[in-house]
Image (tube, rainbow, N blue to C red; front, top):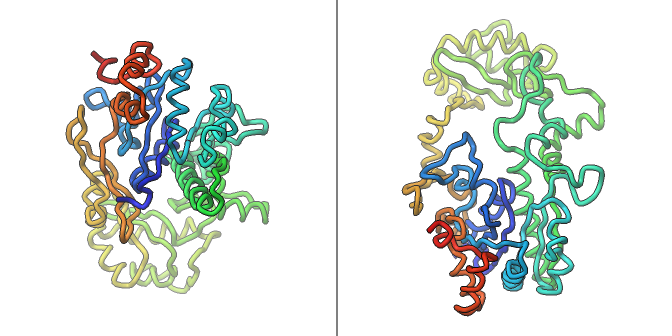
Length: 399
């Protein structure tokens, strides 16, 4: 039993940000009913690396475990009827449509309050519910561009560089989780639901709090380093260094201390831990020394001197990392089509309650009949829903 056991969530989300959020909540024990359109979540038909296993999208499977799927055609009256019944029996509704879509369907927050005054309605958008961008498409790469994130990555001569994963989507998803949990806690006092609004733009700017605060108060433009340092606002010795057979990273540390360990006498008297003006020259001097030994030779030397360091690992090395294995962050679960499926496990642990992988990602509409029956619809009504295609069952659809 997870800490959110007993919490029921009507999940209208698609793509990455929303499903990641509801997956995190599901790991904590929340019951998720994933409400999908007839063609399914967008990620069922789009996959990172264009990779499918036995027809199942890697992207979909990465963020949809511990959920049950029902397919509703929300353009039909019966589809809306079933959706309202699900919401009536839910604690939380989460959606990431463009602003206004749920209202046009008759499922906006005000209408849902009439059905269920205790329901918490969490809406996630690209830019917010009003303003000049409110109806623009919200997508991770667009958010990285608008927030200035791309100008913080890469080296001095590089064009704008995107972060190599869906950073805005991930932080947006975690903001959904935080907002939803806060509203659940508040409801214990008030007894009332409320609307929670999250957007990708605000979430990503929160991730840039350090850098934006610097710029907003100094108006000094970030200057990316020429050397392989960590960022525009950080100086030597922070950076990525090539060794004889790979790369290591060095974090906050006295240049003098590091120089003595690697035998770089020109830097023995530099006691800075964040030298920005000379970071290029310092990096080059240190790297010339690091190239003389392998990663496995350097790490014990550096760690014995309490230097903050780590090996730069490939994915192949990461999934075999002893701490990753110890934390059980790579799990295997049986999928009805794929078979054994490797996934990233829950990241939060609790002392008394569990955070578990209970079910594989659902097949499209796999649980439609099961959910309808739980909602109290009789066999005749269920047959009518399925025959009219206002509700679609996976097995009947694929037969």
